[in-house]
Length: 176
Image 1 (tube, one colour):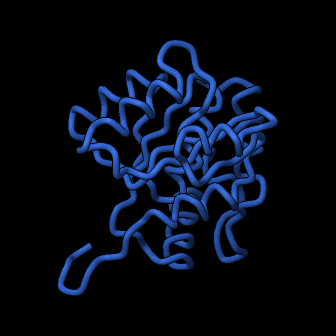
Image 2 (cartoon, helix red, strand yellow):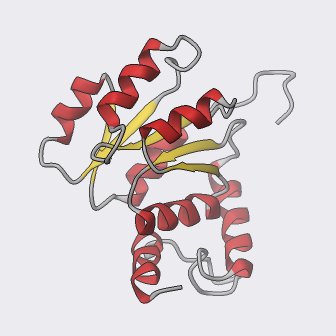
């Protein structure tokens, strides 16, 4: 793992440490710590019935860091490097609880992706959280028809809170 990648992972998980009864370290770097961390996170937050995320971002280092961080929090993460790959994943049957969508990407960007997603009745209802380093990400989100947005660098607690809003709890009689 490169030093740059380790730094990115550390930035995403720097606030998250395992309690004193568990080994110390970063969940994304140590499988033992990750296991204890995920167990503690699920115990603290309550498990979501659907914990799938489609992460759409063209930056490989950010994508790896986010994927490791979200996996350590118990989410199943599918990665797409642009809007077309994201549509391909969705058309292949992957149904996430939420889509995390970077705004600026080469190829099919967030605008083109959202236009096709909203036009497809089988995909239109999947919620989206956009994120960007652009100063006007709120206005961009509004143009995309997205209510939730984050600015880079990402605030990990806001990211997790936004994702958890889209996890549904099991209905009575439904198994998790």
